Length: 388
Ligand SMILES: [Mg+2]
View 1 (cartoon, helix red, strand yellow):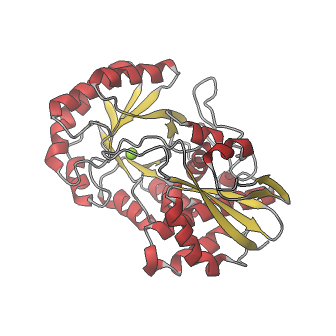
View 2: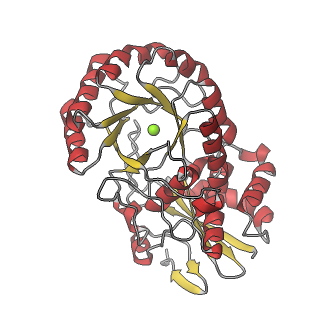
């Protein structure tokens, strides 16, 4: 089976807020669907955490390398794409686009063999994951408290509060938010705090908040520093006590993730399969982390297609229980697939058993977002773009 064409479509129209100081607008594109077409009509679906403007440029450069390639060899084909473009954008747009291609190739292989991707990655079985409700801090401590209560009412036993006002004002105000998050979530909930790299490499600012983080019994402190500030992480880790450090979503190559694991004193490494190079690379990082007793966690907050992809690399790791789950999903993310991954009655999330990623595109759901690519499954046109 040969690759005939790879198309991408930026999903825009209901992009969720990211908590950034210059906030995302609904029409900004951070989530690009990647579709691999083959000469046998089978289609693979992938998802890259990037803008379609960048992905379309990258696809032009990659096209001579992938056209005619064997569509059933995701690892080899992805590595070929990486190696032949290392000087042109590795760790950036090229890698992000290859991530989407790699995910789509695994989806294709799974569909062709009738197997879920996690089995093809080497796992014998999957283990249930405990989803944490991933959300932004409120504008005020009271708003943060209400968000914690909402997650609790929705049945979540874990929640992550991130970004927004945290780290930008006084340590006292941050402490109020942390305690409000704990109060909202309840005594027993697993509380996770995400700083969103706002302190860059300033260890003192982070250290000032540690007593409050310990007092509210935060399980992890996520991304206090920029992704590459390994020394700042290493120094802070010595003072964290019961609070573990978490980072990794800013890893755009396998080596960035491995350096974080080796040198940053992490308890948790968080990998976005749609950024780091796809499932081939994410699985390598999961193995690397597992061998060094660092817990692997998925990073995702766009669609259930991306969520399914994010679960595959650590689906079979029994000890790594906690997983990110987009609590405040916007319409776009929910609408693009017919099926969704929902926690079971006990609150656990399961990686799909269906072939490939186990997700089905929703033709009608895509329509409102003006996706500009035709999507076929077999010889059937599932979605035809509107004329723009
Ligand atoms: Mg984060």
